[in-house]
Structures are given as C-alpha cells and as structure tokens.
Length: 169
Image (cartoon, rainbow, N blue to C red; front, side, top):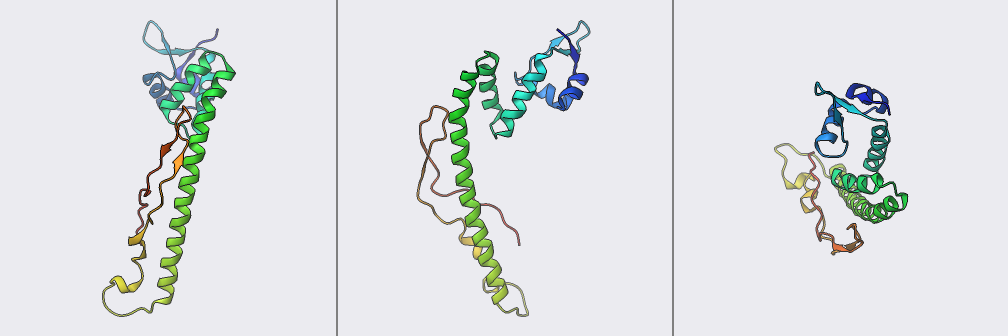
C-alpha cells in the first residue's frame, strides 16, 4: 500500500490541496497522519476522489456525495446505483423546472427588447413609458407542480412561484 502526502495526491488527482483538506474536514476523504502531523493517503484515495468528482459533476450536494460515499465504500455497485437513481430523478425534475423558468425569462427579455425597439426615444429622464420595466411583472405565477425530488422517491410540491432572476438593464 503506497502512501502519498497531500501534494502528491493533489498532483495525481488534479484536486487542489485546499479542496483535499476541505474534504477531510467534512468527512469525505479520510487521511492518516505521520508522526510529524503530515497528512498521508493511500491509493484508495485516488478512487475515492474520482468517485467524488463524478458525483459532483451530476450536480449533487456535498451532503449527497457524503451519503453516496457510504454505499461506494461498502463496495456494492448495486447500492450506489440504488442510491443514485432517485437523486438523479430529483436533479432531472429540478433541471426541467429551471429550464422552464429560464425560457420564461428569455421571453420576458425579448418582450422588453421589442418594446425598447418600438418605443420612440424622448428627451428627459426615463420612466415606465420608456419600455424597460416589463420585467417588473416577472416571474409569472405558475401552478404548483409535483416533482419527484426526494431520495426516497416521494413527491414534494414545487414552489408555485419561482424565485426571481435579477436583471439590470
């Protein structure tokens, strides 16, 4: 079993030492210590970091990564897959909701742009007649939807009105 100091693990994994220390502090990456207090890692740390990177790329939180590491550490691919599936369904639902919100926002921006292009300019200060304030009615109210976004597969109500996206003209 080879041992690496934090700098070597960082070089081999492409993960900065500050992130490795953060992962250790949060229980994601265990490290042994030398007599002089240096962190040392075994070869399993590389596999663990590869797993963490892959799960983070799926958009899961560090808490979810931590939960999934328990299944990964048990060595059961079936356990990882069973844990991952409902989390992915939740991420898909969240992504679809956000995509709809961004589509609505893009439509609002096009509406403001059309109004700016069709409203004649005039001397004096801008006011609500200038065409820039159409976003004050954004986001539009949406009916409440049900999304399967809990790890146990249960549905929870989506917010009826999404959080506004800030826009400055």
